Amino acid sequence: MFVSPLGVVSALLATTIAAAPGDSRSDLRRDAERIVAGGATGVQVRVTGEGGSMVVTAGVADVRTKSPVPPEGYFRIGSANKTFVATVVLQLAGEGELSLDDTADTWLPGLIKGHGNDGRKITVRHLLQHTSGIVDDYPFPTAIASSREYRRHRFDTYTAREVISRAMRHKPAFAPGKGWSYANTGYAVLGLIIEKVTGRTWHAEVDRRVIKPLGLKHTRWPGNSAELPRPHARGYSVFKTGEGFVDTTRHRDADASGGLISTTADLDRFFTALLGGRLLRPAQLAEMRKTVPVAKELRQIWPGARYGLGLMRRPLPCGGTYAGHGGDILGFSTRTGVTADGERSIVVSVSTERFDSAKRVLQLEAAVDRLVSRALCDARYDAR
Image (cartoon, rainbow, N blue to C red; front, side, top):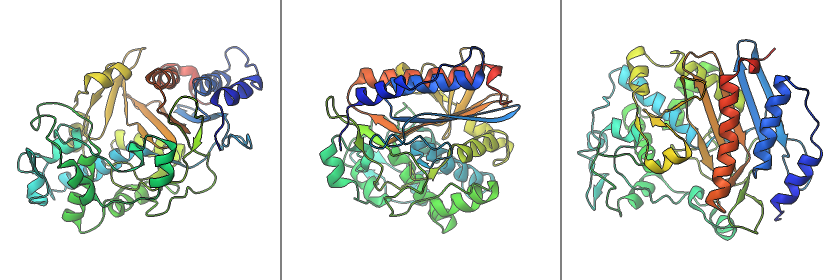
């Protein structure tokens, strides 16, 4: 069922309750409602500070029933998954099981080759930092460009080796270490390296090394299931102007670049524990934090952004920086951040992905960015 986004947004704004000036929860909710007004169906926000966590929602969980967004709902975390994978790789480096300077061929001989791609020159560090030069040719739903393609391909599955093989049909964007280009395929390679080193799949190692030790009871790998656990907001995508919101909640995309399902509470616990030094030894956390500039086109969306080893860092308008990792996958957009001093953190889940125009994408991103910056800069957002 396709529904006009303008109709949903108008209905939501008509029911908004005016907030009292200076009320931090109301201000946060108002910022979340601006994200809905920017073209999303629903939003969950969790801000954690000195007084604990504050959670607000805006919009609807279902455009047909107009049910409210559950404040503890599950969602697909997309590329925030990369930080989980990077954490495992860095733990293995800290244990001496591998080196960041190992080449891909050290562990997966002959896998990366052809059309100028050379696994003998690409290191683990390059893969973690998107400086390998590998060009994506990704078959998963993130590459779907229309509602028709979604319906035809939403249940397709591919192995990591199949994903890598597709990328090898293309010449690299640059020589390893000589540029920056976001490559989901690089994390497919890292997933296989984890399996080669440990004898267990990447998601089994994430579960053993991260999820269980931190008690992340609502973070899970979906395997071949296309379903989301309940409760959850439905995820929607807008593929082209005039088509409206397409329900893209159900699909299969469970690989190492973006496969996990989680909640705002679990993601907040993970990122604060990681950046607080609970998951990595000091030397490995320092390596994760070493950054390079992202590509110019991404800096237009995220000014000042720099990328470490599975971790992004951005400046705050109030001074200082925050670190985290976003995720964009059919139906869901995730943004996370922890201030440099670790005193405040945020997780935002937007249950809409837009592909209809660059203007709408930038409009929605700007609304999310405003909320993140205000929440991390303003002490009033500490929960009381």
